[in-house]
Length: 470
Image: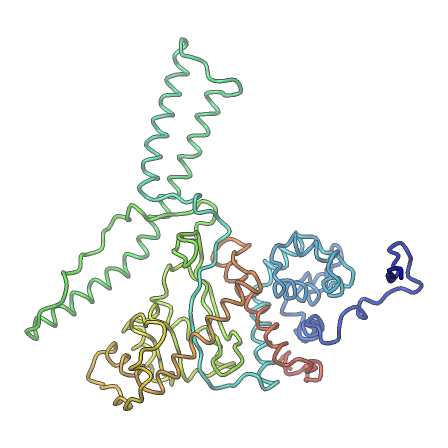
């Protein structure tokens, strides 16, 4: 019996014009994104209100395009432009229009405030749909995201000084060579004036780098001097009590920048940071505050160029809009712990947030002793230090339950953003633009997560007045 195949003919024209809407399943996330974005007021976006020049692409279409492409792992403006031709879902969003990559990048760059407003409105929608509680806990953490710059474009304070000295010597050699008529000529295509100009230009850039490093050091010096003063006062207090301070006396901060202090020529606001998988890379530190009440939605976030999380506990709490969540419990790992940060939250009369922050690394797995039933420890002794109180609090049943939520919420979110969405490097440069892009990534994640939570819930059934503040 002969093999039979279904016939197909790519050259056969359609008898009737096809509808792209028929090609997209009704439960597809595209419909959810379009319906949600259409509820946003146009006034939130940067548009040409004068009406001069060429017609503009509608901001709802452009915003939906960016959110869907970020949610499906396309972050480059050129890649997004290409998708408007090749991807049926993207073609449906754009209604067969094709904004070029410059237009896409310009829209993304100019609408940071609109993305923040959209982020809040999506969380308000989640509350209205019953997926987000007004009162509850959050877990915070940070992850290193590569900057749009190479670490090989960075120069240290010590190396910059050495390079300036070397290049200055080469300039002098070239000038002496130009004055000496009997000197050996340069290779074909090279000229002494061009070589001198090239080195002088390099020297100027290195001097600018040195000034940038000095300015950063001057900003950090005040903080370091205050920390040194506090340490000295604490040790003096112990001596007055007849106790011997542990460890060597702290050293005063140096007025001169460290030799290893660096600046990057491509993105000077990024920093070289140690990552868990790739060693040292040129990065930003992206922070996120995630709901621990079941939704796993991102409730707030920001980007910093601090290489560790030691000063991010309170900013992590404050990045959550109070209209979205009244934070009852705050969970964080040991990288966030400092007595001053915990005390600033716990002693705030306007704050009712209980902090559960590890004071040291905890081993993975559980021992036999951990499996055995144990008596509930006493409540933390207020006479103990903040560190000792936190240890006691984390050993209580409530403390263990709360802290366990941390790695069940914020860590999986970072895993989804990096492995599922594929966001491992910023496309934009500078701390401000990195924050803008992180807002967009968080917005795309939340829309995707909320779509999964609601499945077939119809967004347009909700009153638009709620979203536009009418």
